[in-house]
Image (tube, rainbow, N blue to C red; front, side, top):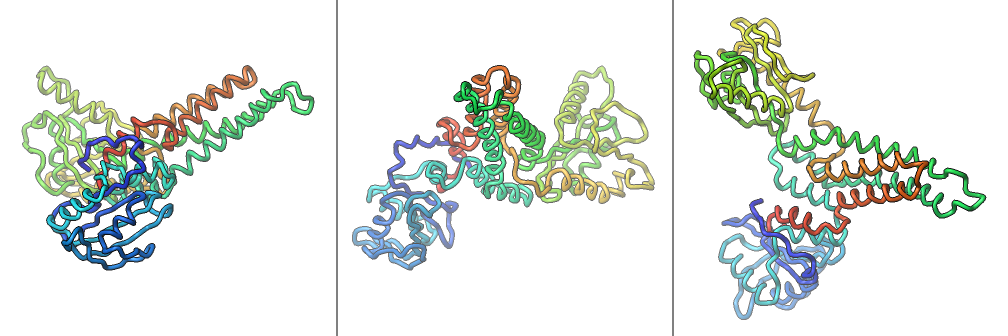
Length: 437
């Protein structure tokens, strides 16, 4: 969103803030949002002292001093049922620079403070209107450029990731109750021996669930950041020509001379509603040319990191870092099946695109809930997993250690949710929002 200013910790949370919530520039309508205890009284002052009916748009002339600034629609959302959980007012005014500037000056003169980047959403999290993962989903929705990104962001905004980690949390709390029972009532005759063994099924289920979520994490991050597809093969296999055919324009230099491509050439497109980066790479072969050898090294590294590889051949066999599900395509003069193309003439390229769409749709656009879409999510989940596995190891040996392990796992989940004291994480996340959000 372009903003990099950190949000001040919540010592200023009682102040009423305002910001332009629509894109700056000339427009038919601009929205200025107010949030905080003075939002409604200030809006009343601007509109001539007339009260604002909750949740109903009213047309009001906005004035400061003796000057009419604009005529605008005014909407008042009382706390706690608003975006931030505070009193919120939206001023839907005309979108000229002069109107926005005059309204901003009036609001500052009336004692309001300009909101910092992400401060509205941060207040929503701190007031319990959403958790941190839902706020991140909102940011992803604002940044979404493809259908797949939009769908995943909406699932996360709807709390699907929250439902996932709350299931882990419930399992850990059930296990902790069993372990604490053995610690607190070890001498009681009516408490069974080794009560903590009853925690084993709960811990096992949590471990399995977190492992499954981590296994799917690369898929969620790929949807957010884009799917990488590397085109690899021997020199002069037609890789650059295939790249140009797939994207429908000349992005890579093509030549009958082998070894034309020395570095990575990237092109961006949308496949099955997902952002995709196609990479043309240097031809794979043994060479004593230091520049070409570096190109081969980079090609192999890109192939290793890619989500999918297309190996283009002209009949030769080469060693390449292929995985199950990758495409092996033969570039021939007269294609006879869907594993063959004529890259120069474009024959069979539509079939390749159809197969790529099917692969992307199958791997990355499933209807499963939004998962661990960020490195932060995966880090918290891994720490929760490690602590839960440690609890399994200590079970039946040292209940006190099991208890501490479970509490460590719960703290990691609290950090994932944004419930822990992680001020620096908040600052880093919310600074990426636009000021009006």
